Image (cartoon, rainbow, N blue to C red; front, top):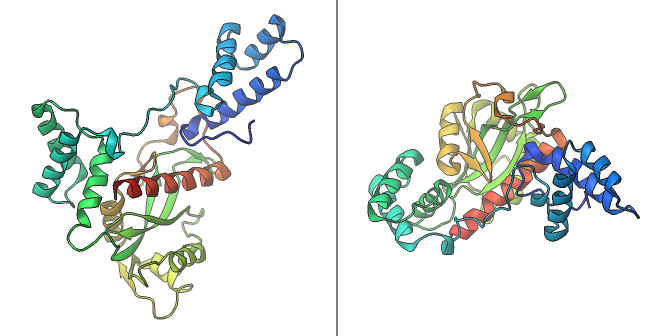
Length: 305
């Protein structure tokens, strides 16, 4: 049961608690005699009342998924990023705004103008992620939706992670196609700030359906990558800020459900842990979180195509 939990829709800060609840529910249901005393014992293990624990067990038996066990979470609604989930008029308004301001305009400007125009038209505005997807789609209209390059740059997850030596917002290296925003690979950097350049280079070489695209990266990252790329591969060395801007234009401020920033966060990681049940994922879970985020991000792009 625990091993089969699908945590895709669960806040990673809640993973530890969901697993703890899953084990308690599994062990309780395995009892031959589920007495009131046993119910109270298992409820106490989870710091719940007997009625709360009973409701938790009932929710699991009905839904059989992790959202039934997540504290303070209702079952996820279908994403409004899908074409059928957004009012056609709102989608049309968003596209009009994107054309007026330009597909590379700051997302905050696109969202503000779209929301204002939708409000005046009496329709519900598309979500921020939908507007971003429409902007990505628009960038490919001039020629085609094919990528014209690859950018390798760094972001910081707004997710506290137990790094083994303390809790931190991890730095992540991302390789993504431009302007489409499709993520080729991403991984956490090492304590010294370097990264597994071989893994990134191999992913770039493996994922090139449109041929050997030119690569843009910051000076030090480009130097690390060229050790593992073919000698004839074009690598454009730019400033760290320029690489970050290019990645920001392609990705926006989210990867799947994860919020990212392009500068080191100035707040402590514990400030985003708002519940006593929140626990930062360990390094192994953080790698899983990243893979889920990449897959979700790429799937959303595919839906917008």
